[in-house]
Every structure is written in structure tokens, then in C-alpha cells.
Length: 283
Ligand code: HEC
Ligand code: HEC
Image 1 (tube, helix red, strand yellow):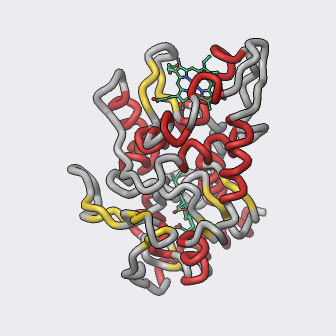
Image 2 (cartoon, rainbow, N blue to C red; image 1 turned 120 degrees about the vertical axis):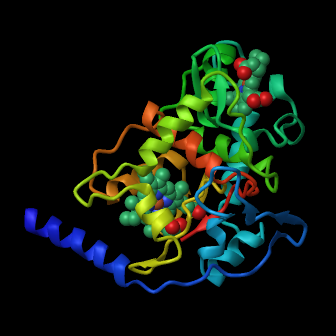
């Protein structure tokens, strides 16, 4: 077992050392010929890159085409599911999301571009998933969704979709957001697992290289939840984080744990200026 792990680690290291480098494509993403998506943006101050790049630029022509046309984007079905959940009455108060928030195209417009946000009541940052749970518990008398269960992915996708095209920006001046950003940054650069890799080992140092058949991107979060062809389904952000951590053979923190929330704050900031692409399509 040890030997196998050692070899696997060496294989990744060698794959990265000798890997071909390819430039991201130089193309524009305009969804349905209407919604212009910012896939390249000048990085915010203090960022390791000059330019932040969407993962879309690193995918094949076929995958890119799926995202550019909402008729063939398989994740649009999840957006429709989300709309159904939005209008469904649940819980002891006899309310749906729509009972209070009305038409999501208006009430939720652009909201998803500015999460995670500071939540004074719980003294932590919340993401869209946790905000949905807050409303379910505190306003609807319904149970919080467990991670990736029930309406969580459809509703999160539906809400983020209302911000399609809007550049991501989060407010680090609220509460202790800066402290969470610092923690997220530390985690991003900490090598873990038997392969001794950090997020930065792949998404910063080796961005643009191939790891097996995968063209490594900057690991941006602006498309989540997104459709993965490999899974033939919608993948939430914390599921993606957990998958990347698992690939380094490290212990995976739980979804919504302090570690993954700190990473979400920090990695979202790393994509400042990129449009929300939800629901993006990746391989
Ligand atoms: C009884 C009324 C009520 C219901 C029902 C309700 N909410 Fe809310 N929601 C609120 C209020 C009030 C706020 C603002 C205060 C807060 O953040 O708790 C809010 C805030 C939000 C926000 C944050 C908006 C922002 O500006 O950041 C989102 C997202 C949201 N709700 C989604 C939902 C979803 C999804 C549902 C259905 C699962 C839902 N809400 C059900 C009352 C409600
Ligand atoms: C062994 C290399 C490796 C490490 C280490 C790694 N990832 Fe990834 N990650 C990948 C690969 C491969 C992909 C899929 C191709 C791509 O978009 O880069 C990916 C994709 C992603 C994506 C999705 C990007 C998109 O546009 O869909 C995010 C977000 C991400 N990684 C975040 C992280 C974070 C955060 C960490 C650290 C906890 C991390 N990754 C560690 C290899 C890695």
C-alpha cells in the first residue's frame, strides 16, 4: 500500500514536472448570443496572478459550447428544478421561498455574485446554501437541508443563476471576513496529504499544465454549482473542494466546516471580477 501511494505521488509529481503547457483559449463567452461573460479580469491587489481566468477557458471546444447555449446546457434542468422548489410550500409556517421573496429574477438578481457574506447572528460567513437553510429554519419552520440533499443544489443553482454574467465581488470589510480570508489563504498554501500538495501546487504553480488528460485551470469558483460531464450531474462547490483534497490523499474536512468556509471566502476573492457562470459546464 505504501509503495503504491509513493508511486502514485511520484506519478503526479512527474506528470506535473514533465507536463505540456497550453495557453487557455482566446475566446469570448457570450451565452445565447446575449449575455456577455467576463472570463478574464484584472486581478485584485495582492493577488498572485496579474489576470484571473475562468475555468471555461481551459476546457475543450465541445465543453465550452455546452455552456454557451442554454438550450443544450444540461444544467438548465437543475435551474428549472430550483424554480419548482422556490415555489413549493414547506414547513410549519405554510410558506414557500416565493411567499416572501416573490419573483426570484427580481429579488435574487445579482445576490449570488456577492456571497459568502458575513452573518452577524451566527458570527460566521454564510454561503448561499447556508442562507437557504437559515430561511428554512427561521422563517419557514422547515428543516435545514443536509449537505447536497433535498432542494439544496437546485435552489443554490437557481439563486446563483439570477446573477449570471455579474462580476463576482465580496465584501471583506464586514465583521471578521478578513480573518476568514487569512485562514483560507493559509489553507490554500498548506501542503497536505500523502502527496504533499497544496491547492497552489496545482492551481497556481502548475496552472496551464496537463495532469493526466486534465488541463489545470486556476481553480476558480465562479461557475458553481456546475454540471460535470464526468459525474453527469450537478456538483456543489464544497463537493469539488472535497474532491480536490481527496486527490491529495488528505483528510477531507466536512462541507460547511470552518476550513471549507474559509477556503470559499478566499478562493471566491481569487476570482474577483469574473462573471458568475452558474450553471457552468466542466468535464
Ligand atoms: C417568511 C419570509 C421568508 C421566507 C419564507 C424565506 N425567506 Fe429568505 N429571507 C427573508 C428575510 C427577512 C431575509 C433577510 C434577513 C436574513 O438574512 O435572514 C431573507 C434573506 C434571504 C437571502 C439573502 C438575500 C441577500 O440579500 O443576501 C436569500 C438568498 C434567501 N433569503 C433565500 C430564501 C430561500 C431560497 C427561501 C426558501 C427556501 C427563503 N429565502 C424563504 C425572509 C424569508
Ligand atoms: C493534484 C492537483 C490538484 C490539487 C492539489 C487541487 N486541485 Fe483543484 N482541480 C484539479 C483538477 C485536475 C481540476 C479540474 C481541471 C481544472 O479546472 O483545473 C480541478 C478543479 C478545481 C476547481 C473547479 C474549477 C472550475 O472551473 O470548474 C476548483 C474550484 C478547485 N479545483 C479548487 C481547489 C482547491 C480549493 C484546492 C485545495 C484544497 C485544490 N483545488 C487542489 C486538481 C487539483
